Length: 275
Image 1 (cartoon, rainbow, N blue to C red):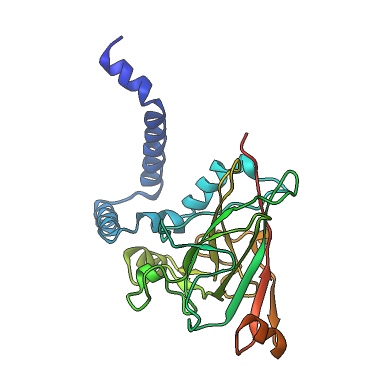
Image 2: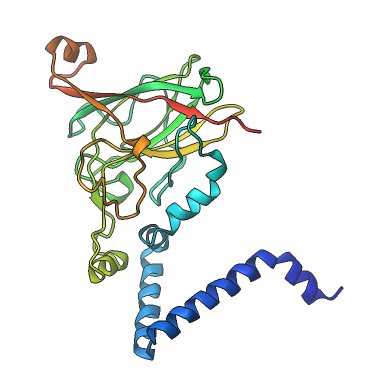
């Protein structure tokens, strides 16, 4: 067997995808009668995307990230399991580990205080998953992540919360804000040029692990927030919209150690067992 044939067999998947992608691009070029000037502008745009590190973002706004995520995890999608969602480009590994109840931020973090609580359980049996690990990250009350904002402390609004032996978790945070994913970069300029907004609704990211269970990566969305029905990357899923309860009772505020009304959300995560 020739070296070329061995390479072709080994790279069959790559060859198949490359050929189909090439055909699709040529079809667009022919159908839209792309001129040289337009091609050079497209190449310049992609070069700029690379310089700014926005290829992940470009994949998001083109709807590719969500589509690939749906294909990848389609076998895990059922009525009993919490729906998956894209990780996004702003995840950081090795966030500080905390025992539940934990906190994603300092007590003086600006914004409406939010307490998240619930259980991590088996989708098949409903039994709790002891010591499940919830890796949580989010933007702040004005829509900035700490690794994009020099004014925030390292790992602000990020933590890995260790649930107890009954799968119960609880942590304190603030209600996040939606944000512009373009922020002046080439992808944002593209969105403006084609008449699309580049806004994402408020959300909190989760990556949840449990022994003998598949890792769940998802996002939860507060209700009734801007862009919930027009997310720039199309990631909103109805079952992932949280229910927030506003608490104004001074007695309850005192119990929670807050001086102003706060929000509370009860959300149970249902994980699928590994086969």
